[in-house]
View 1 (cartoon, rainbow, N blue to C red):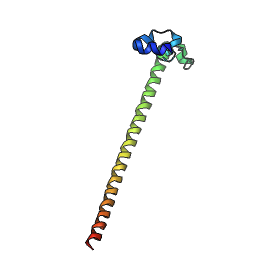
View 2: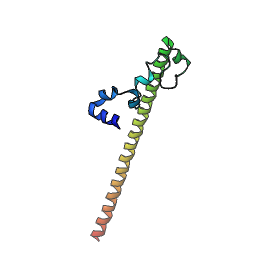
View 3: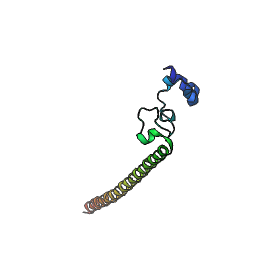
View 4: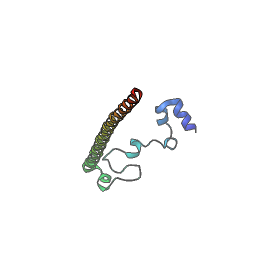
Length: 114
């Protein structure tokens, strides 16, 4: 609990200065090591090519980053399309309901005229 208090008192820089045991929530570059420089400290090595490091390790890390960025772009594109379709559907539903309202108003008016 003292670590949490230290974080709030000294801000993020102060939290980064805490001993490693007190800042276990930080899983940034400290855990991964530099991409393509061999096995990181996070448990898994990421495969034999990345574990070896060197030019092939850097190339593999760059290819992996590119793959995940493309996947993220594709997911965002699909999500955007989904929301646009939802908006279109709701607009059509609004138009349909407005026509229903007008139809009911017309019936009420005809009842009043009788």
